[in-house]
Length: 280
Image (cartoon, rainbow, N blue to C red; front, top):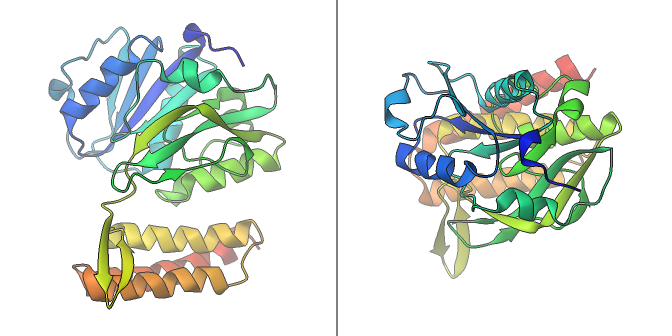
């Protein structure tokens, strides 16, 4: 599939980020797209910290409160469309892109009018582990992916009530339900951080600690419960196996144990409510 710079915009979702890192990302993107959109979910505006802010090519929109990743992504795509962009690269604030990222990404994507989103393989900056297999896929992470405006519009965008976590899975599911496909390119890799991962040992066994906050734990389990029901893949075993593992890891190694455990069970409870409300 051909990469034409004038057809592309890039957007970054921000929430109390390292603005020096964001400035470096803007510099890497400046020769790859005509428009860069920053949607900031932080409580305050930080326009003065974005030293590379060229208002003719970089749009900064402070929400002044946390509206969630899904809402911010929708804002990015809407703004891109206002500037007549057909494709939008979406990035998290800690994702690291190189100068030729987009041309490399599209170098191995087949010509197809029904590809709704192009994702990449990525490796976790914390562990060095590589994720993703190239080719047509059920889903891809939103960070580092490029979505087609027409596809986004046809499904009504990202589901904002999800707020954070499983936003990408549900979006790709909605695309496929409406005749679009997800394709993961092997032409480019993305450096991306999954939580604040550490590895701990207990009686000779290694455990991976994600160290997510109680806030994130709630949305992870609420949306995970909903997603598995959405795709009719809820045997229960894999979900509760993950639940049991996370509870053990939190109790043994992580801080703020009580709040995290309460958040998990509240998330499962609300996930059940969302299934009843939205799928029945």
